[in-house]
Structure formats: structure tokens, C-alpha cells
Length: 91
Image (cartoon, rainbow, N blue to C red):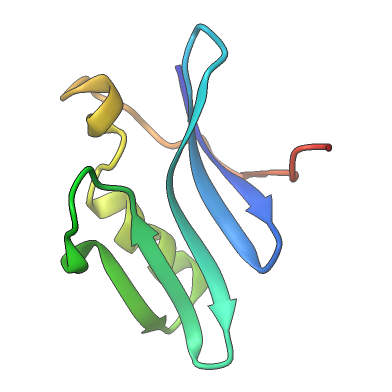
């Protein structure tokens, strides 16, 4: 399994890619006029997993990762986010 940030229009998204080739969006960060908005994926409505107006991209990514949204798919198995940012997917 791979866990990585990928470029997207206006920001980045956190992607979990399984060994079977399936991919899941685990969260995202986007740049706005007021800073950065971030959310971590959840199965239910949980407003604490989204925040607006974060000061930097790095702080917004830390916010998303702190919620460990990949545990929705892999359980409590330890995962580490790969360094760097992948380019946007073609197509």
C-alpha cells in the first residue's frame, strides 16, 4: 500500500493506493483567498475533520494527516505518508 499527496487543481489530495490498484481520496487541501482549507475523509458527518483558513499548505497537510483518515480503509495498521508530492494523474 502507498499513501501519498498528489497535486490537484488549486491544491493537493491525500491518496491511499492499495496493492490491488484501488485508490481512495483520504483528504484534501485547497488554497483559497483566506488561506488553505483542509478536510480528512470520514464515514459520518464530523465537522472537526474540516478546517478553513489555515496559514500554510504544510500546516493544512499536518491537520489532515493528524486525523489518520487511512484507518477507515486499513484499520490501525501503521502507515507513513511518502515524502514529496506526486504530479496530477493524467486524464
